[in-house]
Amino acid sequence: MSRWAESALSWWEEAGVDTLVGEEPRDWLAPAKPAAVAPARAAEPATAAPAPPPPAAEFPADLAAFQAWLATTDAIPFAGPGARRLPPTGSATSGLMAITDVPSAEDVAAGRLFSGEQGALVDNMLRRMSERLLDGAALDRETLYLVPFSPIRPPAGRIDRDGVRFLAEATRHHIGLVAPKAVLIFGDSCSRALLGKPMTQARGAWHELETPDGDVPAIVTLRPQELVSQAGLRTHAWADLQMLAERLKP
Image (cartoon, rainbow, N blue to C red; front, top):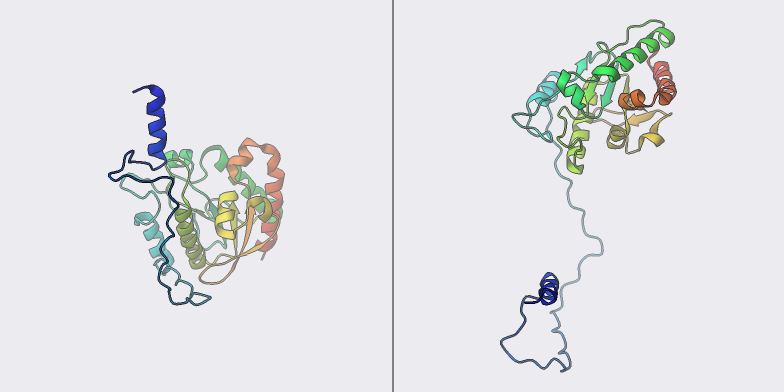
């Protein structure tokens, strides 16, 4: 068979033609027969009833049990025997809860969130915030409650839509259990998942973040990784922290 003929046959096969010669002769020039009319069906209502929503995920009802669930559940995307999880850190009673997206590869290697240079930058900004804006009140990595949106780093760095939806529901539940005075959201991904807005639209304003236990004030800022690589953005992050400090003042 020539290469041209083989190519043509392949094209017809991909188009759905799988029989070259039929069993019975056919007059290809004869007019088409009218299509059979399907029997009439009963009229359907103009507006069908909406399908019931899927049942909400079952999460533990107290904070300690929920933290244990985060450390062991198989429901989280990419959970498995070899998946390393980074738990929340700091004090859940500090009044400030911070949400970051997923642990970086450096975080996983170090076994803690905001490790390395980005962690040092966060520590420095929190210290300046305490000294200049909160009259020296203690606010550091040990006092705020830092939580990853996903405790497991995805192998390719991304989580599919269903996984994001599930983790957003779990995070809202987590926030409701903590009941902080304010939530600091790091980055575009978390802003979209929890507030439904990109970071560029969400920054510079307070938002009411819905949880099963009521709304919680939330503010969005840039991810520490971006502040490390683009020092010029730090003035924007400092402006966000100033707004946050006003909310945290006694």
